[in-house]
Length: 291
Image (cartoon, rainbow, N blue to C red):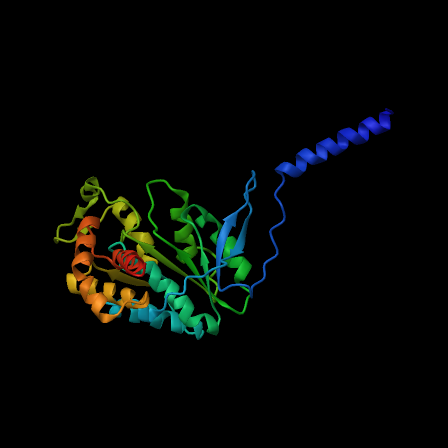
Protein backbone atom coordinates (compact mmCIF):
# COMPACT_ATOMS: atom_id res chain seq x y z
CA UNK A 1 0.00 0.00 0.00
CA UNK A 2 1.39 3.37 -1.01
CA UNK A 3 1.82 6.29 1.39
CA UNK A 4 -1.02 8.11 -0.37
CA UNK A 5 -3.39 5.17 0.11
CA UNK A 6 -2.42 4.93 3.81
CA UNK A 7 -3.03 8.65 4.22
CA UNK A 8 -6.45 8.44 2.58
CA UNK A 9 -7.46 5.44 4.71
CA UNK A 10 -6.46 7.26 7.92
CA UNK A 11 -8.32 10.36 6.77
CA UNK A 12 -11.49 8.34 6.20
CA UNK A 13 -11.20 6.79 9.67
CA UNK A 14 -10.75 10.25 11.21
CA UNK A 15 -13.77 11.63 9.37
CA UNK A 16 -15.87 8.67 10.52
CA UNK A 17 -14.94 9.39 14.14
CA UNK A 18 -15.76 13.08 13.74
CA UNK A 19 -19.17 12.29 12.23
CA UNK A 20 -20.03 10.13 15.24
CA UNK A 21 -19.55 13.01 17.69
CA UNK A 22 -20.70 15.98 15.63
CA UNK A 23 -24.40 16.94 15.94
CA UNK A 24 -26.62 15.73 13.13
CA UNK A 25 -28.68 18.25 11.16
CA UNK A 26 -32.09 18.88 12.71
CA UNK A 27 -34.87 16.96 10.93
CA UNK A 28 -36.83 19.02 8.42
CA UNK A 29 -40.09 20.13 10.01
CA UNK A 30 -43.46 19.98 8.28
CA UNK A 31 -45.68 22.42 10.19
CA UNK A 32 -48.83 20.96 8.63
CA UNK A 33 -48.36 17.40 9.84
CA UNK A 34 -49.59 18.03 13.39
CA UNK A 35 -51.01 20.64 15.77
CA UNK A 36 -48.72 19.62 18.64
CA UNK A 37 -44.95 19.27 18.90
CA UNK A 38 -42.36 18.16 21.45
CA UNK A 39 -38.97 19.75 21.97
CA UNK A 40 -36.41 16.95 21.66
CA UNK A 41 -32.65 16.85 22.22
CA UNK A 42 -30.23 14.88 20.09
CA UNK A 43 -27.55 12.81 21.72
CA UNK A 44 -23.92 13.79 21.74
CA UNK A 45 -21.99 16.59 23.33
CA UNK A 46 -23.77 19.45 21.60
CA UNK A 47 -27.33 18.24 22.43
CA UNK A 48 -28.98 20.33 19.75
CA UNK A 49 -32.74 20.63 20.09
CA UNK A 50 -35.47 20.31 17.48
CA UNK A 51 -39.27 20.16 17.25
CA UNK A 52 -40.81 16.72 16.79
CA UNK A 53 -44.44 16.53 15.58
CA UNK A 54 -46.81 14.53 17.82
CA UNK A 55 -48.28 11.75 15.70
CA UNK A 56 -51.39 11.14 17.82
CA UNK A 57 -52.72 14.21 19.62
CA UNK A 58 -55.05 13.59 22.58
CA UNK A 59 -58.62 14.18 21.37
CA UNK A 60 -60.11 15.37 24.65
CA UNK A 61 -62.70 18.14 24.34
CA UNK A 62 -63.68 20.93 26.72
CA UNK A 63 -67.09 19.26 27.11
CA UNK A 64 -65.34 16.17 28.53
CA UNK A 65 -64.10 18.15 31.55
CA UNK A 66 -66.71 18.33 34.30
CA UNK A 67 -66.93 20.24 37.60
CA UNK A 68 -64.15 22.70 36.77
CA UNK A 69 -66.34 25.29 35.05
CA UNK A 70 -64.69 28.45 36.52
CA UNK A 71 -61.22 27.20 35.65
CA UNK A 72 -62.35 26.12 32.19
CA UNK A 73 -63.90 29.52 31.53
CA UNK A 74 -60.71 31.37 32.52
CA UNK A 75 -58.38 29.26 30.40
CA UNK A 76 -60.71 29.18 27.41
CA UNK A 77 -61.17 32.96 27.50
CA UNK A 78 -57.44 33.65 27.82
CA UNK A 79 -56.68 31.26 24.97
CA UNK A 80 -59.38 32.81 22.77
CA UNK A 81 -57.88 36.27 23.34
CA UNK A 82 -54.47 34.92 22.37
CA UNK A 83 -55.71 33.22 19.20
CA UNK A 84 -57.51 36.38 18.12
CA UNK A 85 -54.33 38.42 18.53
CA UNK A 86 -55.55 40.27 21.61
CA UNK A 87 -53.54 40.74 24.83
CA UNK A 88 -53.39 37.53 26.89
CA UNK A 89 -51.40 36.18 29.84
CA UNK A 90 -49.02 33.35 30.57
CA UNK A 91 -50.86 30.88 32.79
CA UNK A 92 -49.94 28.81 35.85
CA UNK A 93 -52.40 26.03 36.70
CA UNK A 94 -51.89 24.65 40.21
CA UNK A 95 -53.62 22.39 42.68
CA UNK A 96 -54.74 18.85 43.36
CA UNK A 97 -53.43 16.09 41.14
CA UNK A 98 -55.69 14.51 38.55
CA UNK A 99 -58.19 17.39 38.49
CA UNK A 100 -57.81 18.28 34.83
CA UNK A 101 -54.97 20.82 34.63
CA UNK A 102 -53.11 19.19 31.75
CA UNK A 103 -56.30 17.93 30.10
CA UNK A 104 -57.67 21.47 30.02
CA UNK A 105 -54.66 22.71 28.04
CA UNK A 106 -54.96 19.81 25.59
CA UNK A 107 -58.69 20.47 25.22
CA UNK A 108 -57.99 24.13 24.42
CA UNK A 109 -55.62 23.02 21.68
CA UNK A 110 -58.38 20.94 20.10
CA UNK A 111 -60.86 23.79 20.52
CA UNK A 112 -58.70 26.39 18.77
CA UNK A 113 -56.44 24.34 16.47
CA UNK A 114 -58.45 25.25 13.38
CA UNK A 115 -57.87 28.93 14.27
CA UNK A 116 -54.09 28.50 14.22
CA UNK A 117 -53.30 27.42 17.79
CA UNK A 118 -50.33 25.06 18.20
CA UNK A 119 -48.86 23.40 21.29
CA UNK A 120 -45.17 22.80 22.05
CA UNK A 121 -44.43 20.53 25.01
CA UNK A 122 -41.10 21.25 26.72
CA UNK A 123 -39.57 19.15 29.47
CA UNK A 124 -38.40 20.91 32.61
CA UNK A 125 -34.80 19.91 31.92
CA UNK A 126 -34.93 21.68 28.53
CA UNK A 127 -36.28 25.04 29.71
CA UNK A 128 -32.89 26.62 29.09
CA UNK A 129 -33.72 26.22 25.37
CA UNK A 130 -36.78 28.49 25.58
CA UNK A 131 -35.03 31.37 23.74
CA UNK A 132 -34.17 29.01 20.86
CA UNK A 133 -37.76 27.74 20.69
CA UNK A 134 -39.20 31.25 20.67
CA UNK A 135 -36.77 32.32 17.92
CA UNK A 136 -37.77 29.26 15.89
CA UNK A 137 -41.49 30.09 15.88
CA UNK A 138 -41.46 33.89 16.19
CA UNK A 139 -41.95 34.48 12.44
CA UNK A 140 -44.62 31.79 12.02
CA UNK A 141 -48.26 32.83 11.42
CA UNK A 142 -49.58 30.33 13.99
CA UNK A 143 -50.08 31.05 17.70
CA UNK A 144 -47.96 28.84 20.00
CA UNK A 145 -48.55 27.77 23.58
CA UNK A 146 -45.40 26.38 25.17
CA UNK A 147 -46.61 23.70 27.59
CA UNK A 148 -44.60 22.72 30.70
CA UNK A 149 -46.35 19.90 32.56
CA UNK A 150 -45.97 18.98 36.23
CA UNK A 151 -43.51 21.79 36.82
CA UNK A 152 -41.54 22.08 40.05
CA UNK A 153 -37.97 22.91 40.92
CA UNK A 154 -35.47 21.99 43.58
CA UNK A 155 -32.88 24.38 44.92
CA UNK A 156 -30.21 25.30 42.37
CA UNK A 157 -31.84 23.88 39.25
CA UNK A 158 -30.95 25.86 36.13
CA UNK A 159 -34.34 25.72 34.46
CA UNK A 160 -35.80 27.91 37.21
CA UNK A 161 -33.89 31.02 36.18
CA UNK A 162 -34.32 30.25 32.47
CA UNK A 163 -38.09 30.24 32.89
CA UNK A 164 -38.01 33.48 34.91
CA UNK A 165 -36.11 35.20 32.11
CA UNK A 166 -38.44 33.80 29.43
CA UNK A 167 -41.53 35.02 31.28
CA UNK A 168 -40.40 38.52 32.13
CA UNK A 169 -36.76 39.38 32.53
CA UNK A 170 -34.98 39.36 29.21
CA UNK A 171 -33.78 42.42 27.32
CA UNK A 172 -35.85 41.15 24.37
CA UNK A 173 -39.65 41.23 24.48
CA UNK A 174 -41.60 37.99 24.46
CA UNK A 175 -42.86 37.14 20.99
CA UNK A 176 -46.49 38.12 20.35
CA UNK A 177 -47.33 34.65 19.06
CA UNK A 178 -46.02 32.72 22.10
CA UNK A 179 -47.49 32.10 25.56
CA UNK A 180 -46.34 29.76 28.32
CA UNK A 181 -48.85 27.50 30.09
CA UNK A 182 -47.48 25.50 33.03
CA UNK A 183 -49.07 23.03 35.46
CA UNK A 184 -47.82 22.25 38.93
CA UNK A 185 -48.90 20.79 42.25
CA UNK A 186 -46.96 23.64 43.92
CA UNK A 187 -48.21 27.20 43.66
CA UNK A 188 -44.72 28.65 44.17
CA UNK A 189 -42.98 25.94 42.08
CA UNK A 190 -40.18 25.48 44.64
CA UNK A 191 -40.19 23.62 47.98
CA UNK A 192 -41.25 25.76 50.93
CA UNK A 193 -39.34 25.03 54.12
CA UNK A 194 -40.08 25.87 57.72
CA UNK A 195 -36.80 27.75 57.92
CA UNK A 196 -38.05 30.21 55.28
CA UNK A 197 -40.32 31.77 57.91
CA UNK A 198 -37.26 32.97 59.81
CA UNK A 199 -36.42 35.33 56.96
CA UNK A 200 -39.57 37.42 57.44
CA UNK A 201 -38.87 40.90 58.86
CA UNK A 202 -41.16 42.80 61.24
CA UNK A 203 -41.11 46.59 60.97
CA UNK A 204 -41.95 49.07 63.70
CA UNK A 205 -45.39 49.78 62.25
CA UNK A 206 -46.29 46.09 62.30
CA UNK A 207 -45.82 45.33 58.60
CA UNK A 208 -44.49 41.88 57.74
CA UNK A 209 -41.97 41.67 54.88
CA UNK A 210 -40.64 38.42 53.39
CA UNK A 211 -36.90 37.90 53.24
CA UNK A 212 -34.83 37.26 50.13
CA UNK A 213 -35.35 33.49 50.21
CA UNK A 214 -39.14 33.78 50.20
CA UNK A 215 -39.08 36.59 47.61
CA UNK A 216 -37.01 34.39 45.28
CA UNK A 217 -39.46 31.51 45.58
CA UNK A 218 -42.50 33.69 45.00
CA UNK A 219 -41.01 35.72 42.14
CA UNK A 220 -41.34 33.01 39.48
CA UNK A 221 -45.04 32.39 40.14
CA UNK A 222 -45.73 36.12 40.07
CA UNK A 223 -44.41 36.33 36.50
CA UNK A 224 -47.39 34.30 35.31
CA UNK A 225 -50.17 36.79 34.65
CA UNK A 226 -52.97 34.32 35.33
CA UNK A 227 -53.13 31.86 38.24
CA UNK A 228 -55.80 29.15 38.08
CA UNK A 229 -56.30 26.87 41.10
CA UNK A 230 -57.82 23.37 41.09
CA UNK A 231 -59.32 21.59 44.09
CA UNK A 232 -60.13 17.97 45.06
CA UNK A 233 -63.52 16.72 43.88
CA UNK A 234 -66.41 15.93 46.18
CA UNK A 235 -67.98 12.48 45.99
CA UNK A 236 -70.90 13.58 43.79
CA UNK A 237 -68.50 15.39 41.45
CA UNK A 238 -66.37 12.27 41.16
CA UNK A 239 -69.39 10.08 40.38
CA UNK A 240 -70.56 12.58 37.77
CA UNK A 241 -67.20 12.30 36.02
CA UNK A 242 -67.34 8.51 36.24
CA UNK A 243 -70.79 8.53 34.62
CA UNK A 244 -69.56 10.76 31.79
CA UNK A 245 -66.67 8.48 30.91
CA UNK A 246 -68.76 5.29 31.25
CA UNK A 247 -71.21 6.71 28.70
CA UNK A 248 -68.24 7.73 26.55
CA UNK A 249 -67.14 4.08 26.53
CA UNK A 250 -70.61 2.87 25.54
CA UNK A 251 -72.34 2.07 28.85
CA UNK A 252 -76.09 2.66 29.22
CA UNK A 253 -77.81 4.39 32.16
CA UNK A 254 -78.53 1.12 33.95
CA UNK A 255 -74.87 0.09 33.77
CA UNK A 256 -73.79 3.54 34.95
CA UNK A 257 -76.04 3.30 38.04
CA UNK A 258 -74.80 -0.21 38.80
CA UNK A 259 -71.18 0.97 38.65
CA UNK A 260 -71.50 3.54 41.46
CA UNK A 261 -70.49 1.24 44.40
CA UNK A 262 -67.53 -0.13 42.45
CA UNK A 263 -66.47 3.41 41.49
CA UNK A 264 -66.44 4.46 45.16
CA UNK A 265 -64.43 1.40 46.18
CA UNK A 266 -61.98 2.09 43.34
CA UNK A 267 -61.46 5.66 44.58
CA UNK A 268 -61.03 4.45 48.16
CA UNK A 269 -58.32 2.03 47.07
CA UNK A 270 -56.53 4.79 45.15
CA UNK A 271 -56.91 7.32 47.97
CA UNK A 272 -58.22 9.92 45.53
CA UNK A 273 -61.48 11.04 43.90
CA UNK A 274 -59.80 12.80 40.99
CA UNK A 275 -60.87 13.05 37.38
CA UNK A 276 -57.93 10.84 36.42
CA UNK A 277 -59.06 8.10 38.81
CA UNK A 278 -62.61 8.37 37.45
CA UNK A 279 -61.34 7.94 33.87
CA UNK A 280 -59.19 4.95 34.87
CA UNK A 281 -62.12 3.28 36.63
CA UNK A 282 -64.41 3.85 33.64
CA UNK A 283 -61.93 2.23 31.28
CA UNK A 284 -61.57 -0.79 33.58
CA UNK A 285 -65.31 -1.21 34.23
CA UNK A 286 -66.45 -0.66 30.64
CA UNK A 287 -63.82 -3.05 29.35
CA UNK A 288 -64.96 -5.82 31.72
CA UNK A 289 -68.70 -5.62 31.01
CA UNK A 290 -68.12 -5.57 27.25
CA UNK A 291 -66.45 -8.99 27.33
